[in-house]
Image (tube, rainbow, N blue to C red; front, side, top):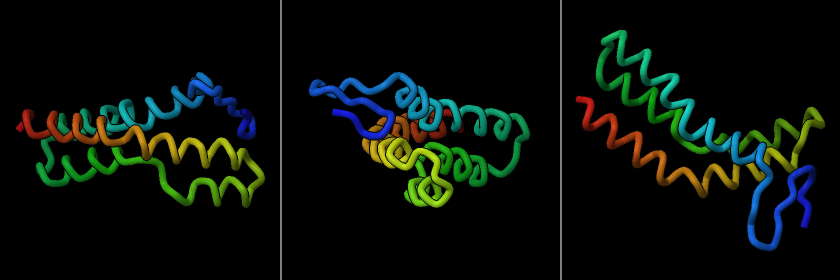
Length: 102
């Protein structure tokens, strides 16, 4: 079955680019934002808030914006859906890392 330019098989295998988008959004972004904040020694509450905000799933308005500019609506909708499903584990992981760091 095809959804826009993303192909999902009956087994649920997702196109590689969607996996990269989800991993980047849910794992890499919190690290890229969180580590420099940690090094700046800012207020702990600010560090936690900004890092956790970056570990959250994609913004629900992303497909709306994509449709408005005629840019990959199906891909954006599927990315929001998948990042929402996959967000539980990275959010818990980032939360635990922040708790253990101080």
